Amino acid sequence: MVKRTSLEDAECPIARSLDAIGDWWSMLIIRDALLGARRFGEFQKNLGLAKNILTVRLRTLVDQGILKMTAASDGSAYQEYVLTPKGRGVFPVLVALRQWSEEFDQRPDEIATIMVDREKGRPVRKLELYSQDGRLLSAADTALKPRPAARRSKRSAA
Image (cartoon, rainbow, N blue to C red):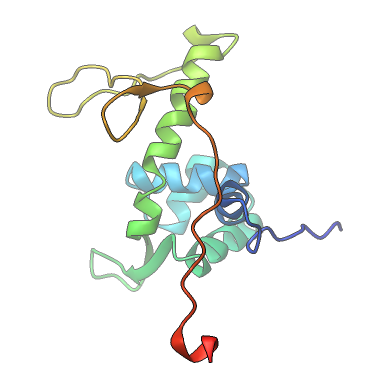
């Protein structure tokens, strides 16, 4: 068995996020949780994932603070998995992946659903990136620069 290299201490924020949610099962679990799945059996049924693999992925998502376990909403003895604010923060990432697939998929007519605004029933606009002054940005309009150095604390400066 090959041990995966951890990216949690990488300088790149994309690498760090992939360390937490980068495998496809985790992203699909988060997708299903956003769509209302809460119980182990729901995730297992929806994804067709082996129970041992699902158990590991759910445990990792809980350990990462993306899901939390709560008492069942129906008062039964079951535990449910609920997205945390960190988990709900993955929503725009999933929308971007969906929209990328809708645009570049070889068989877009086979995609079974469209994403709509729940209130109006209209398709959701494509995500776009804007500057702070409101200009639409492309990759060519952006750059990475070093983050300003953190100020040294008085204690460490002594």
